[in-house]
Length: 305
Image (cartoon, rainbow, N blue to C red; front, side):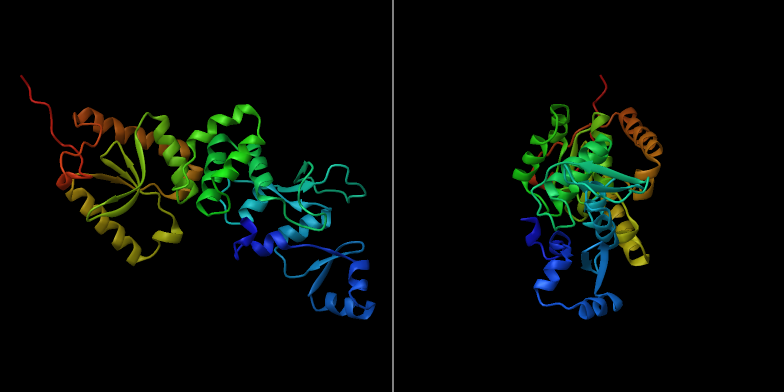
């Protein structure tokens, strides 16, 4: 279960306490004021208090009388989401006496299985809502990310789609939990849309594991600053590229920033790379003739009559 994950459990266990609950537990007004003064507690609404060290989105949602939800919650859990500026908050149906919401807040009104005092929405509810709130390719990347991180399993994925209108069911077949990043998913979808055969997380002898192998000859590595910054990482990458070239592969390394914010440029570049290969007359798919030729691109040309 999601809440069993020690890294995310504090987010899902975050809650507020009413004044009456604290008084019943033996807290005096003096003790309560002292805890607020040192930052151990914070007053989120009249008569409601939450731990002062909670992440800001949880406290902000508590002040509004709701739970952090959708892409805001998922970003807090390190799940990939598309760009967003507004805070997404879940409110219980029928909730009343709520404070005025900032204009940049996106409210999601629905019934929930979460207890009243909790400050984070249910993960399955949040993912289903995020599918509705994002473009289809970003939604697929979000689901891939949550699945890869172990926040949900295949049964949970099924429940997410059961909560969505039928028009979203086509996205189910596009998911792949092996994708290790949102940009990797986006490039995979891009290449599939171009009619390419895409293998995910492929191990190539002398090269190692690569993000994507396209039509048996093109390696695509989706680089981010987190894993490819510094000379040591760049040296490793270039040695891998050289080893791949020795086997006849072509390697392309679009950076995450371009994949996310210059998508059309990446699309144009990938079309050009694939068109160049097609024009060369090389075989489009990898064909393994023997164990010694495993994961080597087929470079043979057709003989002319």
